Image (tube, rainbow, N blue to C red):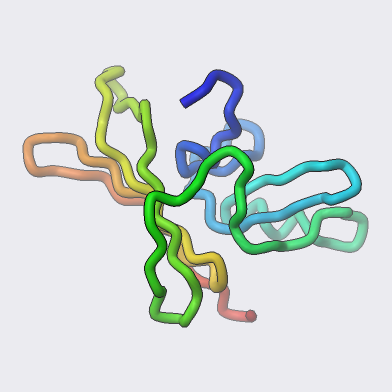
Length: 127
């Protein structure tokens, strides 16, 4: 992972110090900005005063390791998260899976000794 990379490269929301799983993608074409955000921060983007529009996940900062079909019919992008660290600073095996269509996302971090942590984002109910 390169220094200064946005947090969605690690599967996390790009907004401030938020540590929730990134599940929705937004782009402001005029400003040349692309972000991936959590469910909570998605509600503040794409609103009345925003130039962000919701888009399919197409980050200029990473490419999916593979693409699968999600149960909703959308594409499920699977990303290996390089350089992810646990609380002790040890490198972990981490995978970020996110649907380009419905907003489902999961961040799975192998913490060793047959254990893992899982963060999820639920799919959109309204779309």
